[in-house]
Image (cartoon, rainbow, N blue to C red; front, side, top):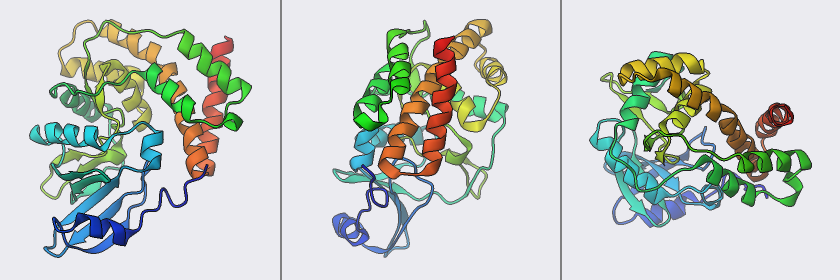
Length: 282
């Protein structure tokens, strides 16, 4: 199933749905969204918003705008994100954040932000990488479930594990592309749709992959930031999570290719599959 124009939702219908709370005078689709088709909206007051729909694609990836709304309420209170405007059954309306998206982040900044996210109050929705893998796999068509992909999926499901670390609030997509430097210099984190209560060492692995930062260096900065003494244990946990993160990436891109048909998704799926088959067979 390929979703036409990312679950193409009529702009006029969205504008009508937001009445009488907001009178929308202009709407445009935003580029860059991987799990949804978001819009930038302008109201008659001059206020600007982002509309994040609860659509077929978000459901396929197991995302909840209600969970995202609750997370934003917490993160905005800590100064890490903009406060949401309003939650609707059809989607989430957020205030537009002025500023520039970062082009890259170094290990020090990424570790600092991860530490701040992990210090947030605990979320009510939980994330388990292996359960998420089951969810992604269940959404795939029979055509996508090749023998190799099934072998990788079965391997990781049979080798589930947990660490001894306390669960924390995690972002799970803390990439430079989700960081905005505002005109006053403040740094804000956006796109909290994957945020959940989970293992902070797995979140570090995801942050490393998202920013192409060497994992060992990131973990060292993080432990220094949080004054963690058992650095070796965190390094061990992160290295153990690394292939699990790649396994989730394989399923995410496989599902994304089914939904959107982008060649990039197919290429990433095939790359992860090749790497993981070598890992499984070894």
